[in-house]
Image 1 (cartoon, rainbow, N blue to C red):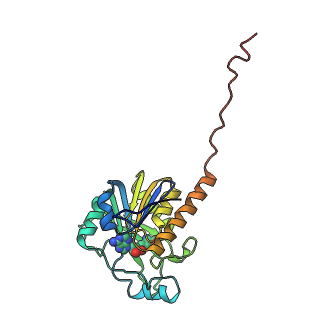
Image 2: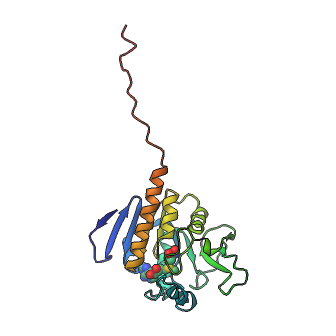
Image 3: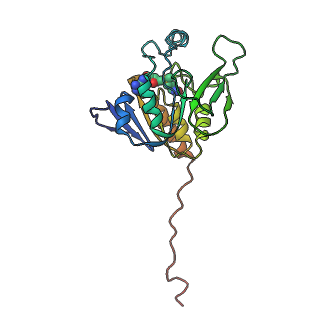
Length: 232
Ligand SMILES: C[S@@+](CC[C@H](N)C(=O)[O-])C[C@H]1O[C@@H](n2cnc3c(N)ncnc32)[C@H](O)[C@@H]1O
């Protein structure tokens, strides 16, 4: 992991393989970044200050220290315009335009007291889709009060076809970045809470390490007998 000194826009910036992670406020950092192929993100909805935040605090998973205020309309517009394609979880909260391709996460909740589904708004020209998975099947344990499963984020990246560069400006514990790394995509992430920024750095670094374990060995340079058999 390569740490780079801070700038007026961000407090920390780390390069981890093909991922670049910023610690800071995305409303200040986004204008400094290039446009990307796909923005896939999960902004705070402004509601988990209530139930799931209290539950997270009671289970010692953080949350009490976390400002859950939803981004304003200008920031949401800035986020959406940063990618050719955009997927925003909680997209039913932000007053976004009508969309054809909503993505639904069916939590197979079976009437427990949390919501049965979550919805992502997209600007993708395709039919709506459903992904079914229980939240408790969370890979590697839960490290953020509203952490998304990596399999869900992998599915989201698949919906953007072959987008090579993925941006998540509300990165939290870095689930989008882990999925992008596992899929061999470049990733840019922004998180303003130092605690979750560090967790994201560690998770993406671990994913990077796992990937390099499975990478095929580079072919060994062959020594060609330039003159060998021809000399006779
Ligand atoms: C809903 S959580 C994302 C959780 C993430 N999907 C995961 O799997 O861990 C939203 C995150 O956005 C961060 N955040 C909120 N406003 C922000 C801002 N203006 N700039 C950067 N990060 C922000 C919060 O600290 C929080 O960690």
